[in-house]
Image (cartoon, rainbow, N blue to C red; front, side, top):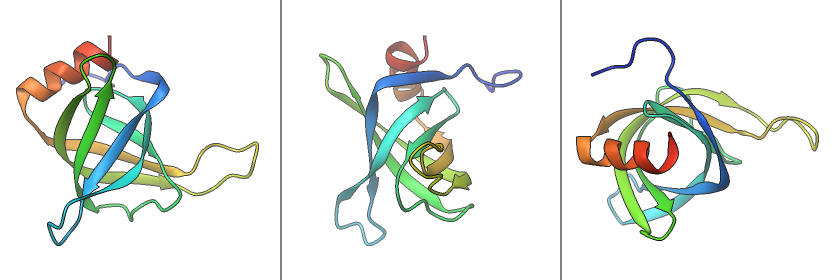
Length: 113
């Protein structure tokens, strides 16, 4: 069920490690760090944001004592370039498009409370 209005976001300290499946299915590679997350998406701090509309298969490392990883398909909704030393971090805002209910519950329990 989609939330009404904007989803509640939480800044993560430390940030969440995020990996992405390679297009040729040869494994995972480091994508960036999730620093602002909600049940509907995440801002990924990275130096090479993908173009808007790009579809990704993400693995989010929730950290903590469980070391749990969750998976979701996602779509890049917007990007932001490097803003200098005092500017905002470069990266991209992604929307989760295919997360299993159990993974969504784990995300909410660990990050979005």
